[in-house]
Image (cartoon, rainbow, N blue to C red; front, side):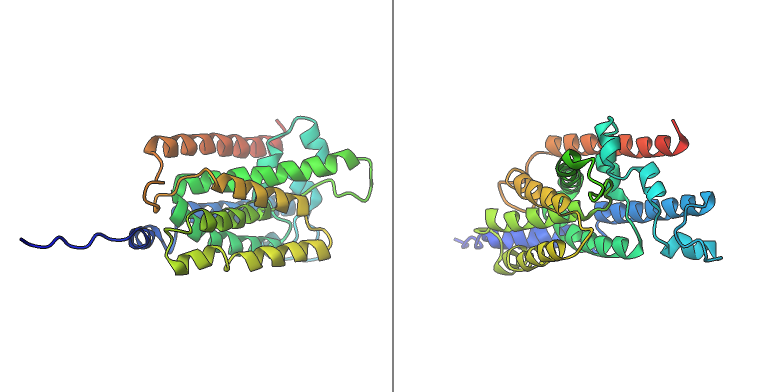
Length: 275
């Protein structure tokens, strides 16, 4: 009799699946970065065309569009998380603000973090669940930011608007840490260390930066972080044997996220056009 070949261990299966799913240019992550950069340039172009640019002394319009800070008026009209607007029923701002950034430096660091974390999270969660993770944690961060600032609406020292994808970035970090703990028994040791020891120092560092530096939306960060951790307790993973989930669930999540994003982008455009 011919001896049967040894069965692969759970760790070997996970490692094989992770190698198959990891991409240099993951589709959803790449698309999100491209959309956010495009919207940033679009807001800059709009600012320049209508004369809202902060650096109006520069004659080169292209320079302002790329490098100039976005005006408060531009951020407001394109969907910043504005207390008065959201309280008045413009709830689309909670997701729209995730796609807006104050200036090039703000955009650069958020996109650098999004691409790095996105490649990892998209590989382990799959495109559909990763998209849901990004959208829902960004929404949760915006919602907590609004809820924390709304009672102080009359206080002139309270920022009335916030923008940025950092709540969703914190969400990916929170989801990654919980993922590493949840599946620690089947994850190969190097992969498990990435999700635990690799991410925890970044979370602590970013919380410290948020506490010590002004004009940081810490409520948005915490809303993203804790919602990401919570979602990671329930989301399936295509690389984990027995936790792959169903294709139907992935399709439902994709459809729901496209509805939310389609409504958000349509609302941004309609608000800019004055409808």
